[in-house]
Image (tube, rainbow, N blue to C red; front, side, top):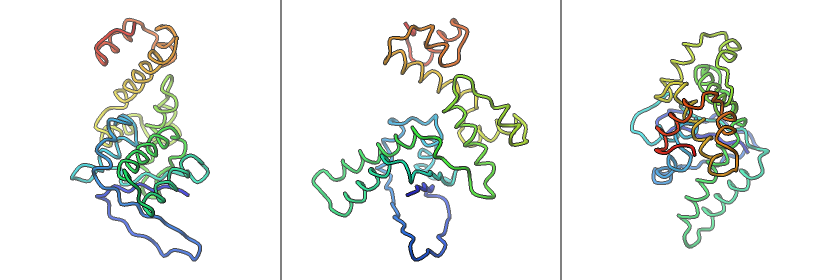
Length: 220
C-alpha cells in the first residue's frame, strides 16, 4: 500500500520478492505530468520532484517514498487507476489524467507520509525535512532546530535546499506564506491583518509590498 515515485533518470533495481509480496509498477508518460506544475505548483517537494522528472538531466532527488498504506482516499484512487487500466472506458485517458492529478494533490496534503531517505541518502532527508518545515509550520518555522537535531550548520542545510530546488529556503518560505495568504484572503472573511499574522508576517507595509509584487494587486 505504500507509494514510491522514482525519477526516470535514476538507476535502480528490485530485490527478490517474497511469496506474499505484490508490486504494481506504473510507468508514467510525460504527457501525464505536463499539467502537474500548474496544478500543485513547484514550491513544494513533490512539485519540484515532478518538475525534475520532466527534464532531460538527472537531479538530486532520485525518489520520494510515501507511507500511505493507511490513507483510505489515496488507496481508493490507486485502485481506481488500476481498474481503469485493466478495463478501459471511453474518455479513459482523461479519467486517468484527472485521477493522477488528484493523487498528487492528496499526497501534497499529507506531507507527514513522506518518509526519510534510505540509508546513505541523508542529504536528501535533510532537504525533505527542511521543506516539510515550510509546509507544516510556515507561520513560525525553525531551521535552527532542524540543524541542531541533525548536528549540522544552518548554512549547510541552506546550500542543500538551494542545490535541490534552485531556490533559497527563505524564498520558498516566502512563496508558501504568500500563497497561503492569498488562499485565506480569497476563501475566508478574515481581515488582511488577521491573514498577515496567521501566515507569519508582523510588518504590514512589508507584507503589502511582497503581496503586490507577487500578485499584482494589494491584499485589500
